[in-house]
Image (cartoon, rainbow, N blue to C red; front, side, top):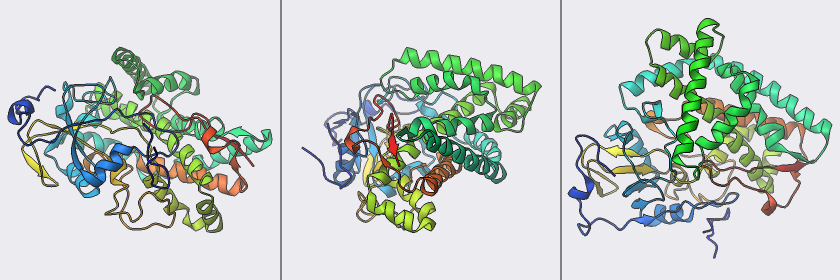
Length: 427
């Protein structure tokens, strides 16, 4: 299956405790829509998922079935409905634990009991701990380090001469270095952390492989926590270890929070930044506009976050805790519901000509980092890193271009997140 092109054309369960069983409350033939089989195929470059594109316009609250898990789920794609579901406490993340919801992956990325699968008040407590650690002072210090790191990595690229693989030269190593600062992770451990990242965010590894890696990560975090308890540093992980020692969070919660920070820091920035560069290099008019008006950069990053299809499929589901209506569709207690932030960011009712990149676009805020209680905790850091990377490249390599034809860039396969495996550039 091929996806929506950048010009907008399309080429040739078990119920939780206390909740009703959807199969009993709404049997087949009771007015429920037929489920769409969603294979979540590999999509190259900036192609947009054709099913998301169609459902957004024709059936913004639809039934879907994916490759793994059990049963069916609702998929909400319209911008206003997505925000409504994401902000409504009657949709529970905690009730997904122990539930084999239909899914694109054989294993659940977010661990049980972690911040991604909790509800208030536990979620509120965990979020407050990390939010305090991600304060303005720490982000400002990280920005200064990011600017220095990006400048050094680009200077090395220039010294070595073209062509260069930007993922190896810049968008990969920079998040690693900032992770070392943020969590106090020794540089010698980056290799195995990257291996864990690859497995955890894979859509084609077995559940056993995922479970084995999660056990390795938990053991590593416990060992690192014991070290930081003896020798604390000025980093986010030391703050979390101190909170755990004071009884503010449990050891499993500490592990979960750490995994969340690691995955967001390494994978999100690696893919987002590299894909942003590819997007600009394949939209020359917008790139020239940005070169001519550098003040557009902060807004340009926001538009790129909206425009770039940064993941395959959808993220974590929620479980309805009571019967309610979304977009005129009745969702019953116990049913699983997914939201697509990607689709919401292409909603033509909110973003005029949504499949076109417009670096001066204003209007409604994008939902690339989510919405509501589970809004991405690392959004400020990810946004900052992408802005620093683009600013450094625009300043130091004004003539940068792709070193291969756009169709020859290789893209990651079998992964939750999308991005180029390599991004060869010249200047």
